[in-house]
Amino acid sequence: MLLASCGRETPLSLLDLEPCPGWQGVIPQNERQFARAAAAEKAGRLCANTKLGAVSEAVE
Image (cartoon, rainbow, N blue to C red; front, top):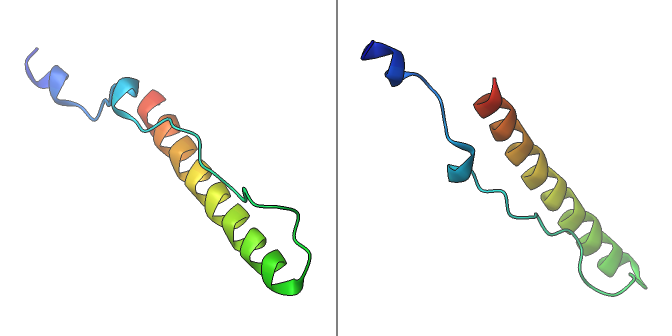
């Protein structure tokens, strides 16, 4: 019985469930701004996908 409580279970309250920001600036007007916006969006999506993976593992 004691070993049954030593699993990998992670309470969902311990997971970081804050939103991941993407691009929050103005609409890009030039190539430099577009590149920065695209990088920010990619970082936000990677952050969100990482959090979804953590939640998925915790639920399984």
